[in-house]
Amino acid sequence: MAKAATDIEQAPPAAAPDGLPRTMIYRHRLTTRIWHWINVVIVFVMIMSGLMIFNAHPRLYWGKYGANNDYAWLQIGAIDNKGIVQIGSVKLPTDGVLGRWTDPAGRVQTRAFPYWATIPSSYSLADARRWHLLFAWLLVIGGLGYWAISFANRHVIGDLLPTRRELAPRHLWQDIRDHARLRLPTGEAAATYNVLQKISYVGILFAVLPLLVLTGLAMSPGMNAAMPWLLDVFGGRQSARSIHFLMMAAMVAFIIVHVLMVVLAGPANEIRSMITGYYRLPRARNGEVSR
Image 1 (cartoon, rainbow, N blue to C red):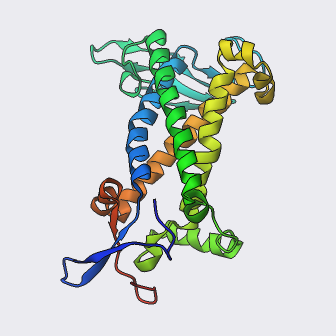
Image 2 (image 1 turned 120 degrees about the vertical axis):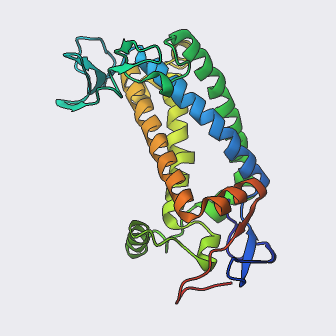
């Protein structure tokens, strides 16, 4: 990930298509690049296997109890031969995508998520749990290692934590406006993370991922016996399941926005930087600082 603006290693200027020199910087450490690409696989396997587990009981509740006749704040299924997503009392038609869809053999299925979104693609709760548990351990071990290294080399403090100035309402609002207008950072400003990136990365690393792990443990009968207090922290197994699902949805939203921003910022430059570590600074606009 990006180093602080005062600690950027520069490579010799590279020629842009217009013949003018462009600055190359060393933007992503090796540990960040390795963890990033490993997690691309781990997170997608966990999301897809988790959706298969959800298919076994596609209803979410708050509290300690949850059964078909209990009130569900979210359910995905089929009513009157039509797929629907119901949130509270609001019903959204999703026929053909969620709740009711056609498999590759032409058979109509009435499960929440379709075959192309799950691991395995054919219904198997047992296999989905095996996939999910295996990759959960990989996520936890890799995540703890990344945390340790990132605190040791001051990546978290120097690169990810927003400063007081960045969190000022005026600065935040300006950054939101710039992103809404697709006015992405250029010149020296592109060498480091902007405040919205910092907030989102810190949120994923220190809120979403820990909650995913802890609520996953809270749903495990074995962990309930070893740490019964964990269920009380989340208000019961069904509340833990709901929080787990919402954190998964937050992760999916983060991935979608992340990929969109990579495309808008220039996928070749962004992907190269996550493979080699080196990033070519976009040319500064008028009035912005260039290198």
